[in-house]
Length: 410
Ligand SMILES: [Ca+2]
Image (tube, rainbow, N blue to C red; front, top):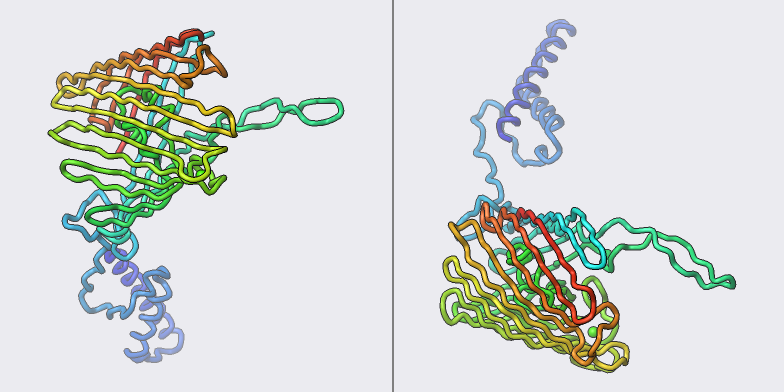
């Protein structure tokens, strides 16, 4: 920047001196006082510099050596990190991306194949007051697909229908995470929208899951976002995450005054081992809407070996209908060869409604079997995943799914 300033100065001086000489010649050799010349030069420079630069106070005279450049804002932290950008008065900004692309082939009633942009998460995060106030926002434009032509019945005398564009899935807003966090040694308090702390796989980053897709039970009850306030912190031997949520889901204002509360407690008794429990329940009026979750999960990672398992029990009340109890579990095991190649196996069970003895509403009790092979080119920053999964229902036709996935994340 200083180089450009000096260049602009030199050019301006050259042009200005040339103009002065020409003017002096034209006006019959009239002398211009040095004082006036210098003053005008400064004004000319001010006018020629970009607005932001012109505001810099006390431009030094051209003849003096260039002043030390104003230091660029740097993050105030123990170690300046070259990977983050200084913002605000003393804050910093760190961008992040998670891209997951799939080719998926499914066979249930019939075979279907498609390429799919599974995730395109764009993260903006950092501290605005280092060590005290942090922020994060994440959007995923891949969640919003083009609206589809859908036939909708209209209320009229002839009972006709119209074709209109409708969203292909229930999610329309691409806003995923929103954090305004106050940090302290024992608790980080966040206001915004984030995942409820149900299911280890659900709660943790989508960039680190073992298979391209989470286990059925984790998807059914976990990996859900809600608006609320969260209290969390991790220590050497334990961690916690507790929250109060609307209970209405992602990007939805609360429909009642009842609020959901959740507590997740994690213990790390030995290196690589996580044992956790979750309790989540609706407090307040539970007549029309209530959601309870209970969970235990365990994860052990030691060198190339990985084992993880979860069990979740659910109780739901919706619109005065009889309450529904659901439950599920899974166990997964993996071994990494040469730090890059990881075969993995998973077996899971999911029962969306334990009272029902038959399939209903497209939901049925099922067993899930998965086998996969992961290739880590740069750990989770660049990985490729191959997976085959089969879901065997009690009554519905079994479904088979083959996924080839690629991921880039930072
Ligand atoms: Ca509520």
